[in-house]
Image 1: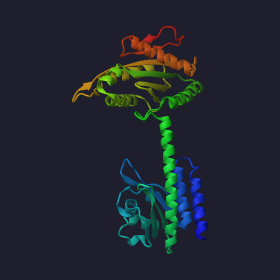
Image 2 (image 1 turned 90 degrees about the vertical axis):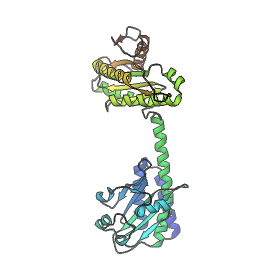
Image 3 (image 1 turned 90 degrees about the horizontal axis):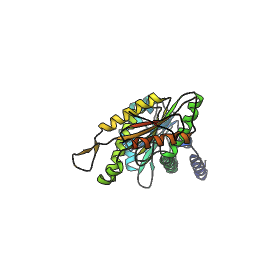
Image 4 (image 1 turned 60 degrees about the vertical axis):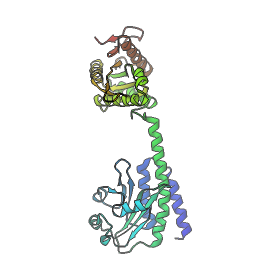
Length: 349
């Protein structure tokens, strides 16, 4: 195959990576294409993980699970670590005798003989590497390392685009401070849960919550401490909610919980747990070695299968129940009855 044909094939394959959904699909396409371009028998892609600070295998082709499960490596460690650190490709016709190889025994078990490892470089630095392997006696040729390097430059762009799309999706779904669903995403989840509760003939509870006197705290101690209080309050919600519960932030200190398969008694139990935990929480303040204690208010509405509500009605009832808790003096919950919202609201004794 002529050089121009190879380049056309690389660019054609690179364009296809843009249409894949998610990073995993992009990674799979990269390893399979790397094998095809270099006539290799196997390939792996390793990516630097920002949280752990290590380089980890994220996808492989033509190798066993045992090879893929090898522990992550540090920057500068082994062949891959050096390639990522220096940004320079590496080639060895006989990996078993290569002193830089950190996992020579694993390579021997796979029957791997020769390797090409090239960096995946952005403008700033390498984010990982692509390695291709041969198990036959026929070593790689120099032009195949060049081909793989060209492809890696295209592949890293696809990875960066997939990461950007992933981050944009995350921003469109989750509140950045708390990691909870934002209002838009929560409403979508609530709609699905309401439909499910009707189909399964099960109750569903909705809890509106906020922190008492939060604005006053924010004004006195600053927005940073206010954000810290919101963060710690979020931890309380996560601690007491089940996996099937859906928790969202509507803005400021206003939160909402959708509790599927939960009737009046279940909502009452959850509300009491949350009130008690917030009451005993010591929130960090702007004053050195001093903590701030506060309370919360909760409004609850329950949709029963024999009289299901539309979402707007459920939200309105929970919101009015929260207002009632504030009117009663805060640090309590109120539950809206199954009667019209304008009528009495059940308050905590």
